[in-house]
Length: 81
Image 1 (cartoon, rainbow, N blue to C red):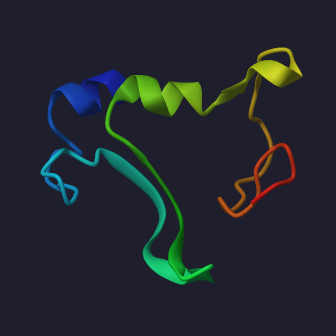
Image 2 (cartoon, rainbow, N blue to C red; image 1 turned 180 degrees about the vertical axis):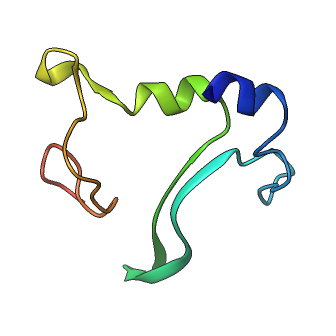
């Protein structure tokens, strides 16, 4: 279904600052704070369907698929963030 959505332009309307398609955006597109004078964002963009699929697996955990409850993008599997 995701491949079909992307191929039909479901996420094509939004462009980034360089004019490239953003694709699927997850998270808050507004800055949530500052770190050493730089804006901090808690969002992920996936310009292609393959990028979405890559985020569902973690090779460090034997290729496991995410099955838990949804969580914010503030923390990564390595505990950083």
